[in-house]
Length: 302
Image (cartoon, rainbow, N blue to C red; front, top):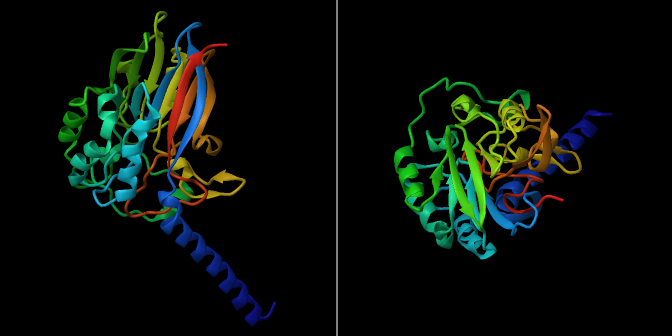
C-alpha cells in the first residue's frame, strides 16, 4: 500500500474511533435501561419478591438525566432495594442522591460501599485497564468522601448496612438472611466475619461491591443462594457480539454483567453482576454497554 493509502486507512480508522467515542459520550452513557430476570430461590408456595439492584451510580449533582431515571424507579414497585456501592462521585452528591431515590426511600433496603464511597475518584489512564485490573491496597491517599454522612443518610431510610455484617429481613412473608462484605477491589473485605453454613429456614443472600472469585467461592461454598455485586460497569466499553474487554477484577469477561449460576464447594448460587448506571467522571462514556439497573423477581424453586 502506498503512503497515501496508509494515510487514508489511518484516517478512516480515526474517524470511526472518534464517532464511537462521540456516541459513547453523547448518547449511550445516558441510555438507561432496566434489565429483568426471574431467580428461582424461594421455597415452594412463596409469593414472588421483586428486588431492585442499584449499583455504581457515581452520582454528581449536575447529572439531571440520571437523577430523573432514579426517581422513576419506584414505578417498578420493588419489595426490596439492594445497593452494591459506588453511589457518589463527589462529596456534595449525598443530598441529591437521597432526593433522587424518591419513593424508593419508603422501600426496605440493604447496602454496601465501593471505593468511591470512601474516597474521591482520581484520573487514571483508561488504557491501563486493558493490561490488568486496578485493585489492591490503595497506593495513594486520595481526598476522602464523607462516608459517615452517606451511611447515616442511607440508614436514615431504614436501609441496613451490611459490610462484614449479617442481617435478617422479612419481605413479603419470607425470611431473607443477608451477609455482606467490604470492597474486595481494595482489599477491604473480611469474609471470615460473616462466614458460616447457610440458614435452613431463610433464603441466604450475599451482597458485595466487587465480584472477586474469592468471595463468590466462599459464599457459594457456604450455601448462599443469591449474590449481588457491581463494580465492573459491565466492561463499560464492549465489542458488539463479543462483549466486555475487561472486568477490572478477576471475574471472567463473559460474566462482566448479568445473571449467571456459579458452582463452588458442591453448591450452586445465582450471581447478579450489575453493569451499573454510572462511571467515573474522568471516563464519562460507554460503548455497547448501556447503563442499567436490575429488577430481579425471586420466585419459587422449580
